[in-house]
Image 1 (spheres, rainbow, N blue to C red):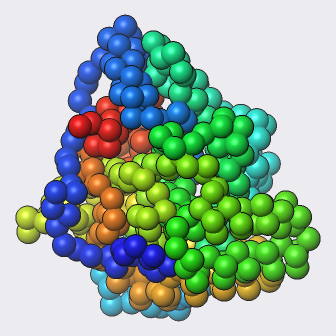
Image 2 (cartoon, one colour; image 1 turned 90 degrees about the vertical axis):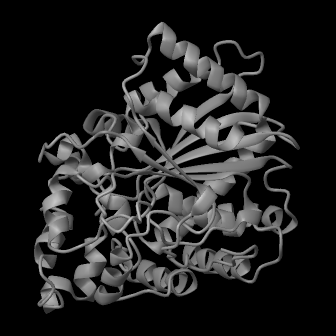
Length: 422
């Protein structure tokens, strides 16, 4: 996407990424927390520090209880309910794998649903229920901090941020405001400035939150920024949400004059993020997209997922081709906002950021099988999570593996190699 992307949707290009693309696989190496593992993480920490990384922020939501595939909008727009899937072999079976309640992904206890609060109590519930499945646990973040800082005079702060996990345009836009406000406060409290970097590792749709943030951080006075901030401020006023209104007010001027990060640079790594919103490369520093992927194609286009029906319904239950959530939670899918006011605001944001709507348009986007956005470096990584198991809790359709402890050294090594090596 271009400089001054101004909230345009990604073009969903199927062209080969060329030099942007790298391929790797998770191999049995040093056991997590072994002396060799700590030594390797220590080396990564040194390189991150030398590059100016001062904070690593682990951004995630919840796989449970969030309509992870966005079937609510697909059902509302048509799908099986209106018979749109008739004549498309295998589509009914695919949709049943995606639908909340049928996809094998449990709900959270006591009817716990988004929006989630970024507090200790909520994170504790997620740690107990999800463990390492698409969830950066307290144990994971604490271990990363200890391992990266073994010999650093200036420690790298490792912290965890739970976004509300509302999988619709309004929810992601609100989360972008909350995140930018948190980054503003971080830069002020740590007195960050020129030469300092903040590295965000964003799992799943948290990456879409960063895509919106990159457009908001554009140094040029793009027209979309005041428009989006105006939509959110008006929505906050109508629904009596002073926290959201105050956050919008706090970041509006710093975004306009480019002072929000106090001269620091925001680097982003997405992990299994669906290709939807366009990125503005002028708003951030380094950008890497990591996708759990195994090539099943016979046409030589190894950088694309395989989206053929009905074959995909046989592959998906064992995560044969990699991350199916990343592949299928594309434009046209989404959870539904809970209130009329939220639906109206969501529609206003939707009209800004995504031109695709309707069941058939979702199918068209899904069949493009695009693994990466048009901006940033790309890593196809085989995380070796296809074991033949049809138990969804073993792999969550290929979407859970990025945050597991056994992948920490692999992820960190590849991030350093891709973004911070000479």
